[in-house]
Image (cartoon, rainbow, N blue to C red):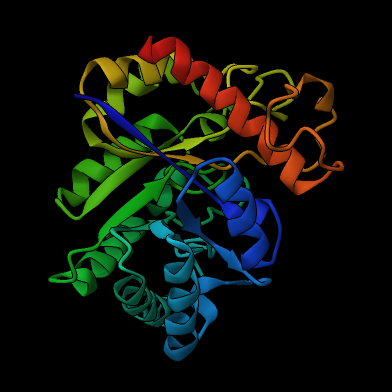
Length: 285
């Protein structure tokens, strides 16, 4: 039986962790893909500070769906050794936070260069990530992102198949593929579905690549979630709405927890939750 579990990049609500949890509670979401905590990425805290963050979320009944790390978001020609040390620290962070996943990337490619030029170095670096993670029980999630090696379905597949590791899986981010002018459905999804272990929910349009609520863009979110549901997918749908400048607040329904909020992060997040829940209601009914 399919099960979609909602999570969120709560730092898009507010920088403050307590405010993040307050708003997520209003929407009945108890998982966080933890990126920014009180204005700093989780992976840059000391382990003692991470333990205190864990205590705070435990007290409120929250868990992590993933560590939303910036790992792999350096240039492919940048010094890798300090980044590998940060990765090892992040493994310890994930252990303390009892996070099953770490979200990662496959390195910025110099503008104008063919990504294939750097293929071997990308795979070599990811191989070192995999080796360092052996025995940790943590799954490394590769996110498709514009301007990194794995920005298209074809190169995501190449990376995942080349690594051929049970500890490396793919994130399917609808908006990021649209912003790379890739076709999400059926082509991109068909190519990657066997490797997908996690979903990022945001949508975008091909015309100018701006981000919109789920279902309002060209990401084919309903079609892909429907197919996942039919296939028995069990996993996280992590809201990463990127609606900070969104002006469509009139679409917010009166019963939404964000209806009476001023414009800003919490209200934008309410719109994102409402849009996703509309899609899920159609799929599940």
